[in-house]
Amino acid sequence: MRRERRRLLVSDSVIAETGNGLARTPARRAFRASVHVILDDPATTFVLIDRASMRQALERYDLRSDKTWGLLDCSTMLIMETFGSTEVFTSDCHFEQAGFKALLGPIRS
Image (cartoon, rainbow, N blue to C red; front, side):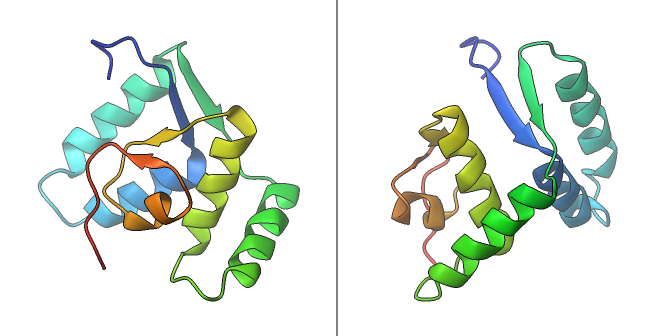
């Protein structure tokens, strides 16, 4: 993504969830270093989830009870819509269900 000079959009929740997932793996140290790179990159837009954003995410979560989208999925989708993003660095098929392009290709669940 850096070689292609893509702008990165990331939320504190995505970083926290990724860190939680990697906490007990050998990738923990690499993750920490990667977060510092992201935070230090002026081309990265870093979004904090505030009360209003959480309420919107919860509303989407409730309204999409026919889907298995998680709260973080809903929050991220709202952020992407706000910033006009159409591509997401994930393999989560939920984003394709919502009309986004998963750059890592979907893993069907």
